[in-house]
Image (cartoon, rainbow, N blue to C red; front, side):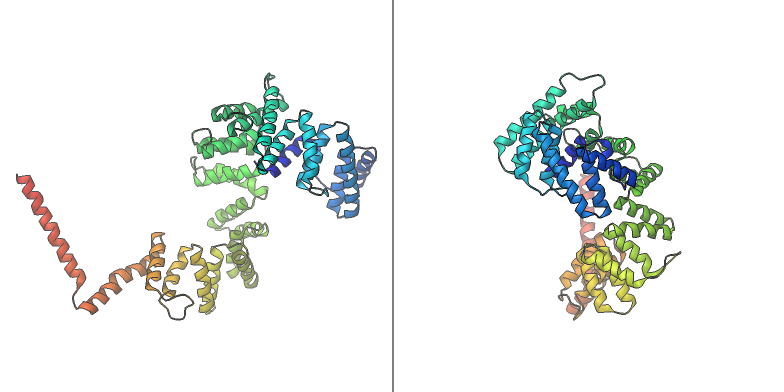
Length: 460
């Protein structure tokens, strides 16, 4: 697990739930926050500078951020372990106007670890691992593991939230062999006992990848569904929706797939928005599909740029034709994001406006990126003078064979014409003998000899 992801997890653990979502505050709410901040409430200071930052008031945001840092420092020096962790993670990531400074972060992590914070010890283990200091890393990992193990030694019934988090970390560390001997089956058991969203996410990975358990995609998807249903995890909703729609690891189920896909779409998961657009396009709902592609394109998804541009290139069913914008999107998708389909679409456009040189250049890019439809044209380019690529019948044959094996009918047609038309013709012209006929007669003679030999063996 990377340090940055740990920082996010531990920061969320330390912050009150209501502070995890920043929204615009009305004037009276801002005044109330200001009063609390003035009285020394660090969390109010944090919310206040975040609000000023959202409003674009950088000067006030920086001023309250500085006071927040000072307040946390004061609380940490007084022994507040939560303040120590917030300071340390802030300095590690350099977030919220706090300059990134691991030199300031490590001492606070050490103090928090000494005060019994296992999360601080774990992060120190990660830091020293990245510094290739295995001895210090092992020491802090063990300290973290031992603290988590102590917290889970006598579980309540049901376990408290703190115990469930400790079970998760104990299970994860056991699974990975951090601070304790690696034991994958015990690690899996502890993760199951934790029964919280973090554990479900890890179990999903374990079952999908076969880590510590026999690979079982369906079981992994069941944990992904829990994350989507009970934790509102939109990324897992996308995973589940995609799996059921494609029948990957689970029985194909259109209704379930659409349900979870829509959850991810509503949460603006770009891949889900794109897939929803693809399904709508297949149903003939062009305008709705274009709307999805356009939205996903605005999130930077190159395949959506290409799909939206394809529709805009001609315009259909309420979508206005806009060739200039379509070309801009295709060029962006191709040049900036290396989308394979974009140069194919550009090639098609340049063919339509009788610009063969520009079209050929795009087909070359598309074929290099694996677009099978472009391989027929690429093969022709290798036997066309002044085409911009090297003259090479060998390369021509390679591109057509590759495209044919991938299922492109044009490549198959060209390949058959080459193998069963052009080559026999060349042999006949070169040698004056229909070589294929001779070959066929020889083959027929061999088959007859083999049949006679087989009959002789039977008679014996």
